[in-house]
Image 1 (cartoon, rainbow, N blue to C red):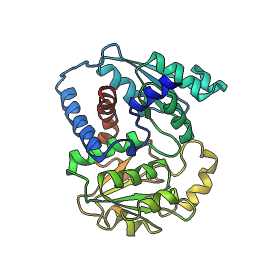
Image 2: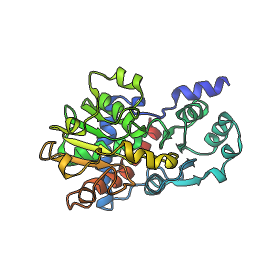
Image 3: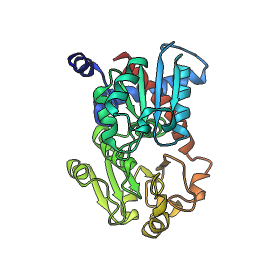
Image 4: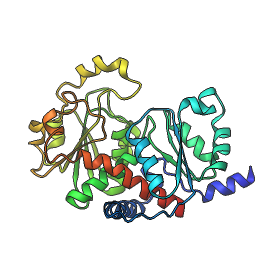
Length: 309
């Protein structure tokens, strides 16, 4: 155990945005923009030839799997996709044991799972960097892509106003951490009973406010963001949630309360006609597709950062 502890102190993980300093986060985003340009110009660099990324999925995903797998291939390495059927985690092996074994065979691990404590325990016993590719509490990789997208289209997000409209879910909670790390104001409009973690809000009350009225949150905002009203695992609540979230759709009317150059973002998949209108999703100047692509570039920059630390 002594060796493991010595290793773990030297190993950097990315479980929430708070695992990096604001300076480091901005460096990762600047590097992501640079790597995106290199990819466009087909400047293929393979700094991690023969490196292996272990991808542990307890929740399904399109964007997360493709972006990490393609990203590692573009860096010259390999990725191993492990579904719940492919690991002993799904059959009750202790998380600590899985972490010790997997991290002895691969160079970096990403995990998409349920409880945040699962990934915290895994990282504690992993000898290689662990990336949170989504838990029930946080989705920090998406925030790297979102902030990258804002920077590309509007410049620094520092000092700007962001409106989160909808469920106080893992994305919303990552936006709270982002407000702290990137220094912007966050207004959250959510129905009663669907607020984000109250302690997290309280710890960031100088930058974060929780409102009921979406128009109040959107007023003079620079960015409006939402997510599906029923996340994975909440499908049985879909009908009930539709009733609670009536009036919380982001559409042209709500965008009219924001600044004239305000952006709209969504981590996808989107339900047109529910949390977002079709007109907004399919607008010619929609940035959601840049935002989705930026998962690839932001995660490449993140992996490079963790592997070269």
